[in-house]
Image (cartoon, rainbow, N blue to C red; front, side, top):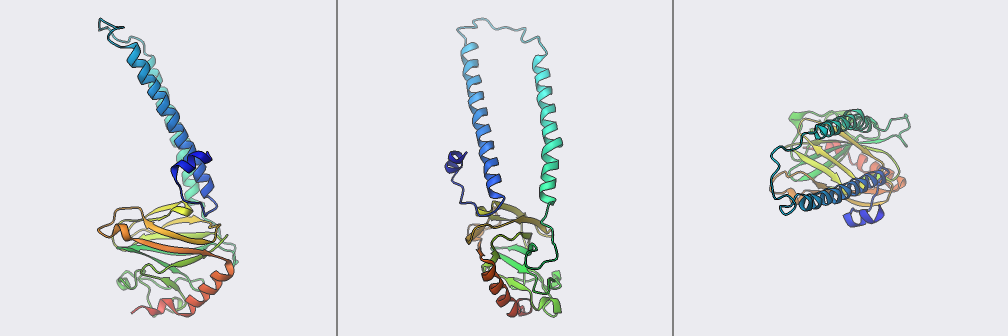
Length: 261
């Protein structure tokens, strides 16, 4: 499996769930290789067995057995069982299994609102009061993509990173990113975290992961979103818990929510 992953050229993983996804990706490619070899072998056998020299006269009666029908029906049933009985329930469980809060602000999952806009990424954290400031659509603008009501008391200590400004997360702590868009459909992708989620206007879609490696990681847009799509990049940095607390405290004291005009 390691060899397959090396051939795929995946970036170094930096989240807890990345290794499981990488293994799944390797197994899928291995299955595709087996199917490719199998169908190629069948094609070559058919070329030899049904070549003109071996069959000078056409058989107009054709196949009279119903075996092919039974086989096709069996394959359809197996695929339905795999999809309805396994794939859909397992996926529903995975996407709904968000990290649970325990009431401890030092270890609870960090919630971040991620807003895509042409052509940058923005992030919004609740302040130390653990409350997101009031947000209204009429307040949204290029400088205030989250529509934060600056006059709201709960917004005064919010942490906001706009216009592609890097944001940070602590290593080893779960993060829940609620992804949305201000204008067109974008796609929030962090390759090292193995995270990809469409950002759709009017929707807030959660995606969660646990970063496990300190470093700087690129955020890209994986959905064609306009003439500046290729330069729609952002960055978030995974740091130690101590460094994150300092960054978070400094940004909160700066009054991110109240800085919008």
